[in-house]
Image 1 (cartoon, rainbow, N blue to C red):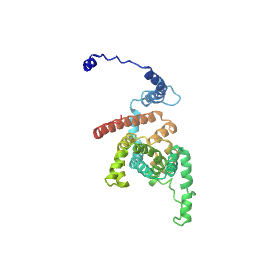
Image 2: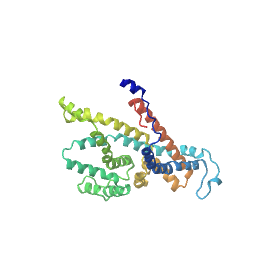
Image 3: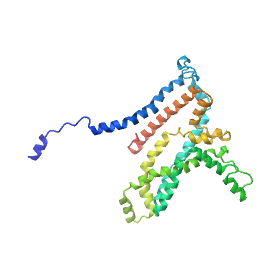
Image 4: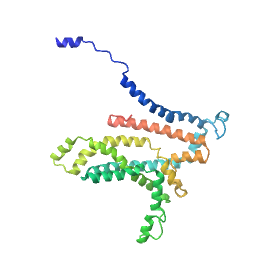
Amino acid sequence: MHLQQAVTVKLKPKTKISWRRLSLFILVLPFLAMVFIFSYVPLFGWVYAFFDYKPGIALSETPFAGFKYFRLLLNGEIGNVLLNTLAISFLNILTSPLPIIFAILLMEIRGRRFKKIVQTLTTLPHFISWIIIFSLVFSIFSFEGIFNTMLMKFGLIQDPVNILGDPAIAWYVQTAIVIWKHTGWYAIIYLAAITSIDTQLYDAAKIDGAGRFRCIWHVTLPGLMPTYVVLLLLSVSSMLSNGFDQFFVFYNPMVADKLEVLDYYIYRIAFHGNDYPLATAAGMGKTLISIILLFSVNFLAKRLRGQSII
């Protein structure tokens, strides 16, 4: 009888738009407007890549250039710029497991107060501007800095070492600075992932006789792999974006051939060379390649993990 009544009961029609959903949508509208204004409206500036535009002349009065600046970009010095960009991005990807190692070591610290102190001190560099970081690094590694002064005082070297001006180690120096600046910050993501791992897995491993190292190897690392894979794929998709601030402050004539990445190259040809069409063409190429990389790694993630990142 009850089953028959349950079958004959008509379902109430769902309300189309509830007030709660509408209020949440109204709250998010300003942020959507900001995204549209600052991320999509500037795309109309791509039209400058197809005209012989010069500052001070109206775009309607400039001749149409077609794909002239794209050909100039491919025949110019973009090869060395891409080499620097990809090399530094590859080094950053190669050192991407360091935040995982740091997060695991931080979780293994027994002292709660000491753990908080270490986490705070390693997270602070992320919030320091690149100008201050350059001043700090220059005061340490310049000819009269602490590094050279101490080595010469102990007789380890006779002449000062120009670390910031040596092109042979320029890529590695910048990678080391990025590691120091961001490792503590990126470790926060992995610390959150570690706390979400089921503690029963650790209990089962200890019952089976696993020590601390075995628990890390068989429980912690597998639990962190999904998070690491997603961040790794996102890093691969943004390989052409090394950032601008870092290379703007560390750029000097001695390491110019090694530190001119794509972001700085676009800035230099636009504001130093007043070649806005060429800079726009380079920015367009960077955006399109980044989108292709993003969808490629998304397809790869779906094939390998069964889940996509977008």
